[in-house]
Image 1: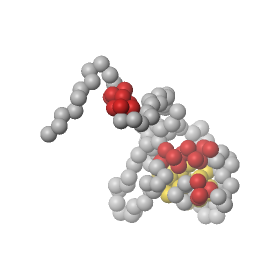
Image 2: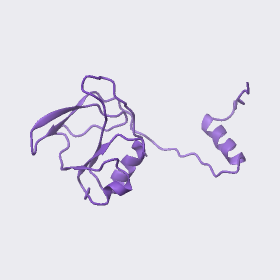
Image 3: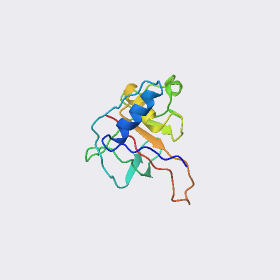
Length: 141
């Protein structure tokens, strides 16, 4: 079994960056501040064309909306990659995206921000009788 070298005077990031560089690849470490929260439950209130309440589980690292919540028109962007935005206008709207692996959540959020969306909701698949759904985070600087 091959043992890993321990870098006592370097962070894991620095050691990985150095290893990648020695293999001839350009590497770098991005550092940025984050807002970290552990939100509880949330709800989405649909007011048109039908009225309904949908339970939601917000990601960690999400900032809390104002007490009155966040309102806006909801537009569906499928997997939420660039091609999914071709025929929809998202400026100041709430984008609804499918939870797919491509693009990853962070890229979905970055594209929604680039497209001037007010917010991004990523809906997860699953059945109503199954309490376990894939959860995750979105971090950005």
